Length: 282
Ligand code: SF4
Image (cartoon, rainbow, N blue to C red; front, side, top):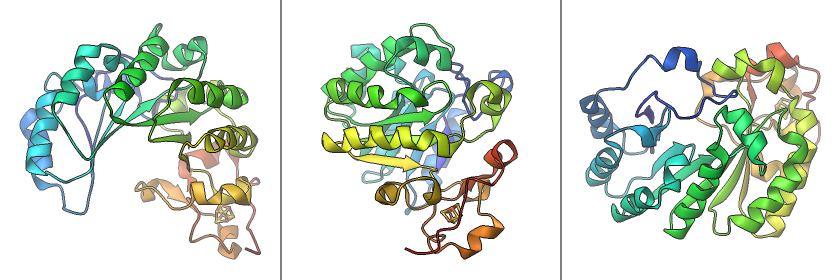
């Protein structure tokens, strides 16, 4: 179950799936409401806290402590832009909660500060995110690096991968994510759109570098026909946003359709369907 802790954010990413012109006025869900969600989360579901930027929620530590107390074994996941963790005291305080089965996903868009800050629309955000990741690793957190693939960063994925190898030893995994074109991402589509099949070769090369260096890699929202077969195990299976995903009529003939992560519905009006071609033999 995904739940926003706040709609405030100290970034304003051009590829955010929310329309931040609207969400910035939404304020925050009541604390009691969040606790009720935590109380009622089904046993088989993970708890995922998002935003906005969840670390900006005043009761961030209280909410996580409450969740852990209620569900001692449950997997808890926080998706963050990482900036608050540049403050070592903040990271240390989170470590002191001893959250156990817990992971933090941090979005980083590039090895270059200028590219990341342009996408995040926040000067200095790259430096803080990078320091944040280093601090989280220093305190032994399970950290997932989340890389949204877009026009402004896809060409330099190999250099980005080398940067990750050199700087973020100990990451739990690196996830490359193809864009869903809703919210800011739709509004800014002319600046950020890149065809999945055009970006895929660059992502594959980056994945090779990471895999060779012992990193775990995942590809989210890479339909199998746009990547080489070798990378299918990194991409197979759908995420939980089934209602926003689709297959095409021609996918009916594809022998891997049951393993395909499917296509974001919001991608098709921008890209058409030509690049998706049924795989006829395994
Ligand atoms: S043809 Fe359709 S089902 Fe087959 S891999 Fe491509 S998108 Fe997936």
